[in-house]
Length: 339
Image 1 (cartoon, rainbow, N blue to C red):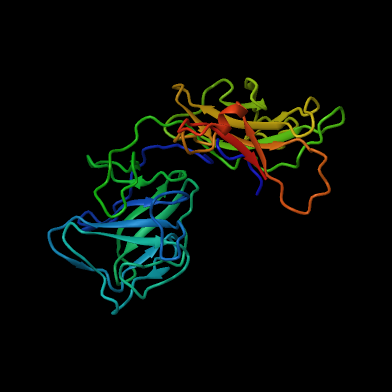
Image 2 (cartoon, one colour):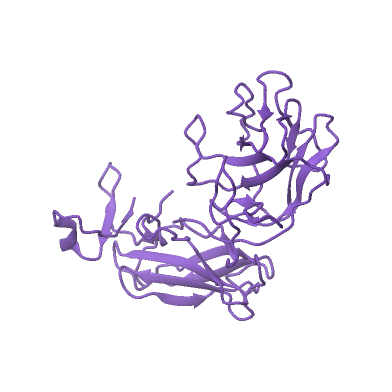
């Protein structure tokens, strides 16, 4: 996929929804889960970043999980079963256990368990822990909200209703809940055809999915597309979900706008990002750009450059001050590249 790094990828959102505690006397809780693990520090034995589920024994006595089940489907409570006898899977009092929701279905090691499903990110999804009889739901999230890249969801450190958590803490006590989060942004156009530039150059149609989280979207123009050519100032365009071209369907939470490219010259860089606001003026961006020293801030492309003779991949590198790139110092310089 072609993109312009230096400048996070997807999104940051949150909301507070109740977890459904099926049994009032539940001892083992699904205390936290991460349904969109892209860069979280947790990796599995293959070096990948799978979704994960954390179980917590809230009681004072150990619990054997052999023969229990995890499921993401309310109509199939026996979707994935813990090892029945070996290896022994026991959760000590106040202990925590991490299970990868990777769809790899592995049960050979008690500390490397993988379910046969991945976690859904969509609002209204289901997750439950079921006892060994295959019928008794120990703990469940009967309809959890839209999930967000690298943001975990679960029981905050102060207790109470489940919510997005400030910090993902797999295998450790949970962090506090997030209280101020903007809308959820996902599926933003990131790799369109390269524009030709010039009078006949076609516009780039940018789409993105935006859904509310804690609060409804802003009443007026909640979604904005911000783009820039090279290192020029940003231009802001209001994105619409009104069914009027280039938007195709009204009310589907897919917002659309277009960027004209006739003013581009050969090899020029074009970058864009999305900003969405709720009715309390809390905003979120896509890419999230949470770490300003190491995250992507924009999606982007470059105009066709006319290079057709090279049989090797071509790396395009852009920097706002070329002199800084040659300094033999520790000066921090942001750069953009396209390949």
